[in-house]
Image (tube, rainbow, N blue to C red; front, side, top):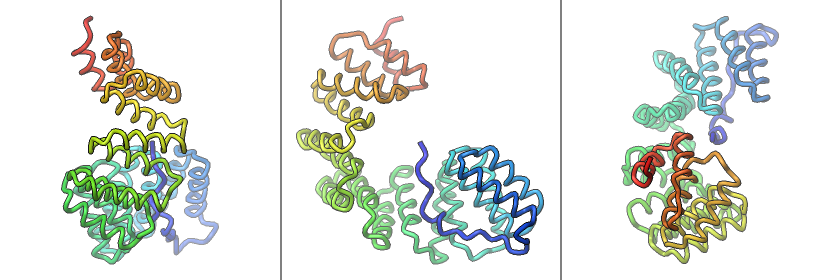
Length: 313
């Protein structure tokens, strides 16, 4: 599921100098933006491409079209559109524009197409050009943390993000995850507390603290924080799934089955929930193979492994 567009996109000012307000170029761009507002992506792309065909060599048009396609890419996750955006923004390199925003945007799009090395280069270029957008530093930290497992570099960049924007709770949670990955649970829990203090009504930060307690093998506190998260968001299939997984690991099979059934009832399209239910059934000496089969049909590789290990044809 796609998240909201990065904050820096809201800072962009469209550059369409050289055209009257009634020019075909401007009209096509406006129609495209209207379709974006109405979530009609195909029609938006149609009009954006018509606009670009009118003026495909002007720097401002390349810039604007690269931005617009980048926005669609981040909204939809469509890889072809992401690649189109990167291709257009790449053309701007030869003009040596002093625009840190362009590099930030291109970096974010490159993350979408899993070009992590290219994303880091562009984010760092934006920073060298004077970017003070905390999200640029945070995104670099996430690449180092999740894609490269370079936790020292991740910590360096998340620290800089926090220095720029000290009231953003997600940055403290990301720093907690870094500490969790290097098995510094005490520091991780302190960071979770900072995030929760900034957003006490968010279940997400409570879940992350529960996961840290779980990995630290403090199962009592892990369950406590999962339940606190459920008190805020009782119909969250993800929280119910995580709680069921912890209970399964602790041998609390009846509770695990109850919670995973609730999770599946709320979201019947999550393949990994069927895998977990199949595993719970097997521990309860029941047949979990039908759950594995269903998860396999939904594309789960984990289900394939569990089916081959646990089930007879």
